[in-house]
Length: 497
RNA sequence: GGGUCGUUAACUCAGCUGGUAGAGUAUCUGCCUUUUAAGCAGAGAGUCGCGCGUUCGAAUCGCGCACGACCCA
Image 1 (tube, rainbow, N blue to C red):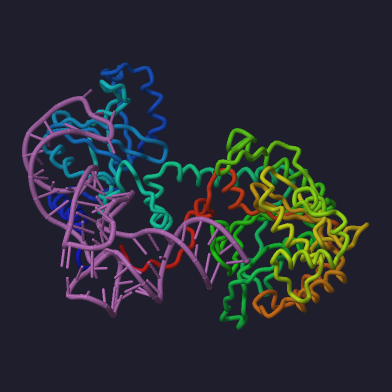
Image 2 (image 1 turned 45 degrees about the horizontal axis):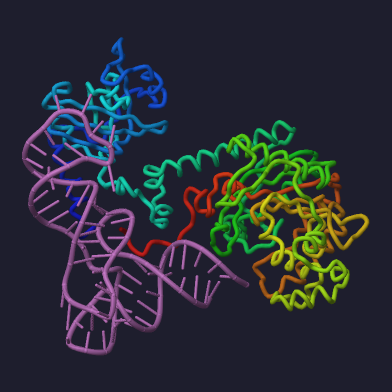
């Protein structure tokens, strides 16, 4: 931008300079009390073409110019505010020669204020006939082309502000995102859950298996980690006597980026004392189907061309059942640890030396079953081996009282009856640390304070995590997580464009 | 990390087997008081992502790098 401006940018700056020299304020801040465009539109419903509103009411609107059709002594343009869009008609004989000369320097992209009367044009479009015009903010850069708009995904993500200006469906997606989060709060609050905030910076990053971001606190002289999950803190609150808690906040994972992964993402976690994972399946089914009805107006939604029916009840399979019924495995084989391990290797799954049949089974599930779970499906009875924080099943201690929820082949939720036996918990932590392999960045430290908290006694409870971004993707039919995060992470631009 | 594809004017895109860059929108000038992808006439605008190589000559071919998309791990 420094050396050679493109002529189009130069033209804008020259024009702005000319206006400023003529005494026009390019950045005024005294256009008071504009009316939302959406509130004006119904006022003109009864107007016939080529007629003005009878009582001649005056309207004040402000917004960005999105299109412009100029004639010699008149012009039409559209302005857009947050609520909508309306056409403005400007006539030289109504605003005066001087004002009209200034108006001729207005461009698409400028933010302006208009005062005038409501009327309907010959072609039937409700419009405001301008009596007074005011520049509020002069735009120095052109908006993308009016017909194709902005489609380059890289620019859309890097310059989200432009994306939001020109792509109304993008604004809708983010409004829906806000609405979904608001409804979740309402849903949980109505059921007695308390919304809490727990540390984003943790001395021990726990509650999940992932590589954390590391930082350093100068005054304390200690390493801190951005949290990979709030789980262990929320469960400390159960120890403390809060019986239903939830948190909606950011988690950070120092791993790859993809259409389903952003280094920071929003997670809902909630914990309920004296509940089991069965109770949470019921709650989840109720919550997500209700969200769909509220946000999409139906429980039968479309995601990227696939029909998805979110109406309860949802299918529930144990992992073994799913491997047999959907994965096509022989039921007898699942009872044979050696055969499971062999099959996993045969399918090209790499298993660490210390990995057991539970790990192999889980990997086989991901490979053979996961992507085929389009309609919502709860998978239960996860192997204890892959569930370090979940309560063991009382009849079969090799599995846990846990479920994951899959919709459109993707994991949406993960929940379990909580492990609250401090001795069992300590042993599992130690085993996990021993097995962490060569990656010292994952779970570097044993969370002894968490074990201490459990020693005081945590009530029987169940807890769940729901990835908000993925849920929003589902309910807004968005193909990439970057479509539901306002400012997704990208590599730095090579150069300023 | 691997593979495939992409990167050309502010935006959306053409540009064949190498011959030195085009369209539409946008911009600028003129005409135009009911248009809505307004219209008509004219004009200007690009280190063709970056670098190296092959060649008399590279947007085009080769190699490397950057950024992005999709798929795989």
